[in-house]
Length: 437
Image (cartoon, rainbow, N blue to C red; front, side):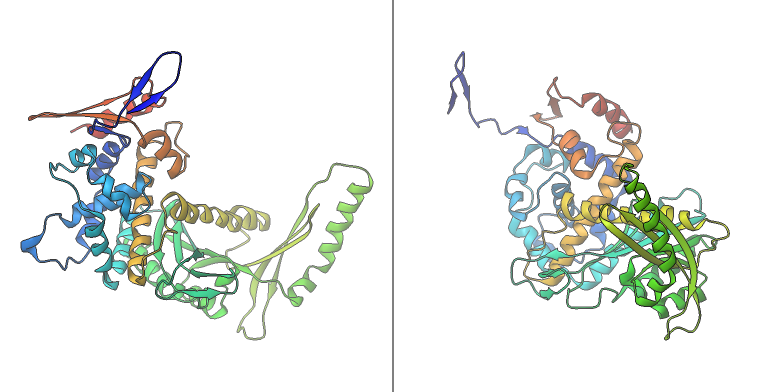
């Protein structure tokens, strides 16, 4: 019994088992019923269990894992509480307890490589099927990131750039859509595996959209002249970062002096500190290249000092101004890092603590599928609400983590929410749309 001193006596206990903090899982389940993300993913997971002893279906366990991540539960041991929650049991249409953390752990341990490949294919297929009309242009972003490790996970290695023991997953996105989440060890070249994956992406997208213009965008870690030559042969546009060197610097010497002179003049005239920028395009050929390629440079000076950047592209600058090519196309690449951050932080893609490498690949895929489920929710149902641009974590805290009283009888289940719920107007808008038959 809990007693809290106040103006009047207050008492509380934990005797009511039919109260849940996760009322928003009702919305999640309706989103899933419309887009079949978890259902389709469950079909791709190889089930090695003896059919005579199966209690929980693969779809039910996959729902439990993905819904759990969406609701903010990062670890398998959280499911020791989820499995007893009457709300989850009602959503799953079960009267008995859901799968235990041990059962879900065995699922992770039995994942094979083909399952990971097929789940990545599912991400791509969901992206392609989302278009009602063929797109005119698709910009595919590619980037690698680190996932720090704190144990003795399989394929664990030290990475000198990140100065930590980590994995080095490779992500592909198009705007807000996640296309590929591919886990890799960190003791490799960051470019490794990206070329064949891009080849498969282009091939599959062209099958559905033969006339679409595809642009490949990445940082300087993906600048390989043979790769660029292959893209040119395939008539694929690209804009990729280029590491600075002495020859490139020489090309912009005069521009650097000009920018610095303007900055110093403004400073001497006691004008407010400002950023002075200039953009330049020129042709460049390294000794190992077979042809010249177009370089775009940004020459900038601000209170931090010089900021000189280069990128390489085959996009026609006659149609798009140099400044716009850099600022409006290349620089938008940075937004991809937000998508990676959402997968890693909002959906716990950084929690790769299994001893097996393939199990950690599966965990990353679960985070990616959770991102996809919330993304479908956001773009289809939240776009005219205050949560239209919200992150996954904000949607979780404001809309999904909702105290709910569950009343179960023989013929029905009733859910009751607090009248003081701050976002009940959004909830009321969503309910008829999602629960319409």
